[in-house]
Length: 397
Image (cartoon, rainbow, N blue to C red; front, side, top):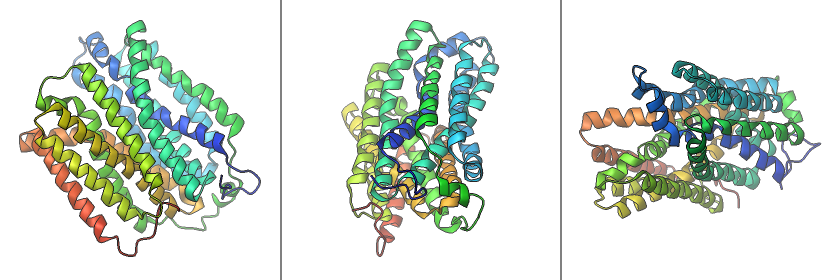
């Protein structure tokens, strides 16, 4: 394993990467675990005005908070250090995440979810920044791919466990899952270390933030977030374009889509010597193919295969964008950069259903929106292809 580039006295090992990957799963769990009990929550608060709007907001508002507060979390971690901030945020996540288990008013639940989202912003940003701190080169690429693949695969398990807890304990059951953050916080306290050089450079400001080179990558990340989460949040509606589908079928195809993301992430790390533009080009071409197939499909099988292909492409794109940005960030602004990346990506998650609804209203059909996304993906692939000449390899040999 590569030695820690920021610390000459300690070396990051597999256990450090595993713990940071477990921490990164927590923000994804905040939304995914509640999916099975959304109907129960809607039924429970049926007398509340605007319940059809408020219950989904209760589920998704943490994503908006991550988008808004991740850049601040990154800046804070650059100035104060990472380890203690990560441990504190995991403890807050566990406590505030559990609180709705005992609440009876929907507005109170939504307020706790806002605080939860702020804690998520810190967890995701700092865990990612520490991967950048602890590892470099091939090891960093591998752990970024593992992190993204693990988050995707954990979604399959978390939906199932959330459904089981909802079945046994009712609409509040899944909130017990947030307690998983406590043992992870304990592991962070025992195993992780604060990069020594990070503490020195955090106050030196010797290197400026490379905004001109990072900004185009952030815009690309936003687009990737939009096309990825369009599939995730609109999965059932897309499948219904070709006929009626049961919740079980939607869940099964959703699981396959998440496996596609994981496989795409693993494939990224295997493409030795591939440049950033080449990886973006391949990923967006796969997304184009998937969206075209979903738009034109007349059978559930073709739609499912198309969505799998699109998710495979997104699975390649996510570690590509994160690895690319991390490779450009000086040590003393790494937290700021990962915070911006996290914020932009989660804003894509929050904005995807809103953007699709607005476009569908304007264009008249979901099929037309899917074809528009395919067209934009193709344009993006062409732009990436135009940058191939002279591009340096992103994936280590």
